[in-house]
Length: 157
Image (cartoon, rainbow, N blue to C red; front, side, top):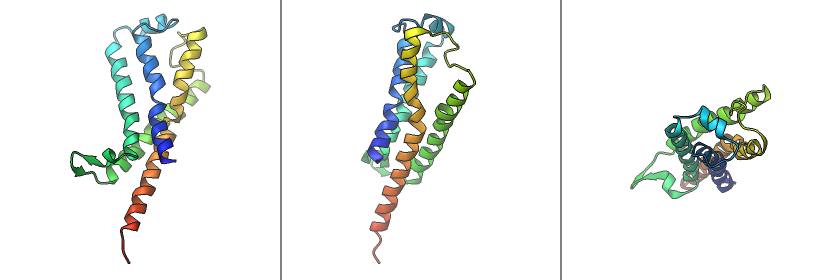
């Protein structure tokens, strides 16, 4: 469960980040109007995509040894737990709740500038991100169970 949640939290960030970069670089047919609307935002789009991928990748640290150390120093468990819960709740709100409410009320993140096959591709690339927050939170709670179980096993009565 923990591995699926952590790797899933990272995996769902990839399609939209890649789509966004390909769109801003002009490699996606049918997105010229959207690219023109974001002219001058290339650095922002690249930065947003990299931050999104890096934040998604941090979920893997909850299941790998490198996620509990910086250099040779052990990280207190409250740090990945605290940041994981805050981040998981934030992306749940942004990409699950707010996105779905916005879509239900007729708002589109592309300002209605993408149509036809290009819109289908965009939706397919962005749809997985609605699971980022819930997967992140599942990975955090699996981490909590793991570290609490390890703490209980190390106590001798």
